[in-house]
Image 1 (cartoon, rainbow, N blue to C red):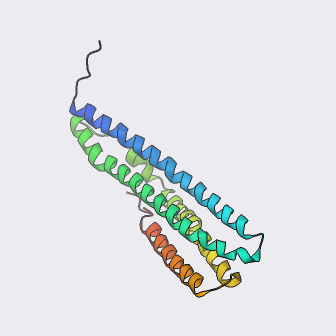
Image 2: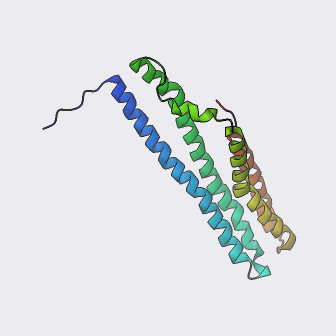
Length: 180
């Protein structure tokens, strides 16, 4: 029978790091798949709408799908960033105290110092807004121009517009455009 591993502060911190990285990885996978889900939802709604001009009301399905997927994307992206921030600040500091010296978990901070990080983050913000806000806003515009406008559907579309604006603001606020 193998002897149990000695529990040391350093070992506890490394296990915490491993668990956080595993959670971060699974959240990254989910977040990235939400972009594909949004693309699939957009394609499905457009494909269902194209055959007949009388189906433009189906375009009103896209904004709620977008808000649902976009909010889930945003929450996961924020948690991914929060895990990274915690690792860079708290966990690295505690590990440095236990190990002594500098350079503990250096990659967690080093990759954020890339000269092109700012432009990549701005481009990612544009992609996020395009996928989750601009595409459904375009669907609403097509509905307003070509749809069968009733009081109820106009009200629904205006509520959806407000939700898209709110989502877009939140996506922009959480974009993490800074370098540190």
